[in-house]
Length: 317
Ligand SMILES: C[S@@+](CC[C@H](N)C(=O)[O-])C[C@H]1O[C@@H](n2cnc3c(N)ncnc32)[C@H](O)[C@@H]1O
Image (cartoon, rainbow, N blue to C red):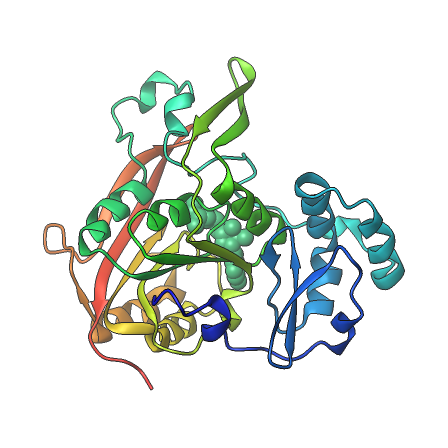
């Protein structure tokens, strides 16, 4: 991404939110033309319907603000504006262990002996090693969670944008990017609760945004590398996401997909696979299979991933 191009140059604006002009002092806004987005905990909240999103994820936003910014006044504002907030709406997230997914995290965990024979590297390291050789410019990490892969990508990309629709995770990812250390706490069935930490370099070439991948705020072919980690199995129409990625990936740009996919059971991925075969050149095959099957340890289980890496042949209009 050329240095002079900002995130706001490539965002496709959803709609304008006039009421955000009446901002409380703690709720920062970023404007681009007529469009305003709230930025909370350094995280732009870019959803087609921000009001509806805040109602749904209000608790995640409050929790993030309470943890990452000291804005007690915000809860009054939220309640006044969105009350009654339903605090049952906090969605379950897979990655509740802070720091999970960052390099070095697994080294800190005492694993049971039956996991020892399995690879220690995780999927993100494998994808990073393969794609990293191509030196991509602008990267996009879809469903970035707390940002472990986004962080890896930042080491070889000029700039990276991480996208997650869960506000707490997006804010956590933002916090992690600037941090020099990530402290974590995990539960081990044998030894109980443990704590640890991993060191990391602070990075400033990453922007995390809170948005839904099914309504991505990008429309131009600007990305050199798009990564989708453990997400396509969670969305209803992965083929629609793929078609959109083909509009925003540069021709020759790299797509990497990692998913715990079961080819036999997950019929809704058939169309996804057909588009991959039609429009991308798979660059990594294993025993003539276009998907790399990868068994590794993750937390305390053996995690089976399928990894697909390829290049876009030509752009979809
Ligand atoms: C299983 S986690 C994977 C996190 C990380 N990419 C990894 O590989 O470890 C799935 C992530 O996708 C996010 N997610 C799920 N549906 C999404 C959507 N429609 N738009 C954006 N993010 C989504 C979740 O909040 C979660 O952080």
